[in-house]
Length: 278
Image 1 (cartoon, rainbow, N blue to C red):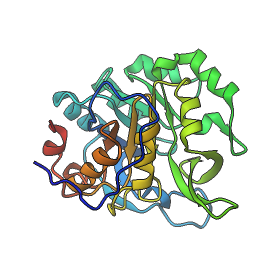
Image 2 (cartoon, rainbow, N blue to C red):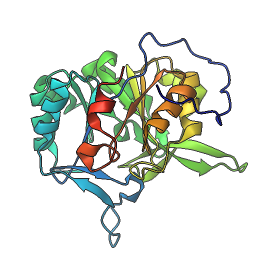
Image 3 (spheres, rainbow, N blue to C red):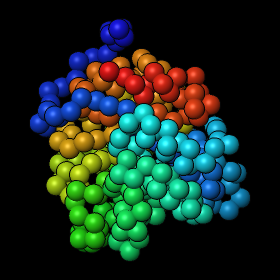
């Protein structure tokens, strides 16, 4: 039995309905340059002269290998993320290997979304398409809903900390492979609005993504207090203790994804223990 984390302050009361399912592990397959990889999220850059993204791990196995593993272990709701161009073939390999078991994100728009769903993706994950000039464009969001239906749409609200004009540290959605700040804050009001526009929300804590230095506790607590639809957190998980923190601060209503820390991706956390959690 896991130890209770005694040093955490008690979170404020919930403002959203309690979930119908307990917290669960969501597997992932991140693909860059056609290879399954794990990177430090904040190191991605399209600027000329910038060094390559910091890579924690690159697998000798194809995306289909991991998809088949997740299928065998009956893990559902995982995601395939295409980090830039040149990854469609590998992504298709994964979703075809596990029909209905994986969501897919990265460059998704109303024109190509159906292609991935028809190939076997359970849902499509979208960020950059619905943001322009730092704002969310509800017309574009509606185009996606019209194309695939709300029930097969996941919004990626991956975010980074930024100080406001009043000096407060807040979380704002970042787009274009996590490089551009939007003006869209991840807060109770905005989460409530988007809960009516999609079936799930995925949130990467980009500042800690891939660093294995612990989770964004403030972000997890926020998600746990306002989530009224399924929400998945990713970023910084390095130990069973971090999973316990997510369960405590997220009130058992925030699912979690682990990348670089898993042994299948070069880390030290046993995939078999995480994947078969009770």
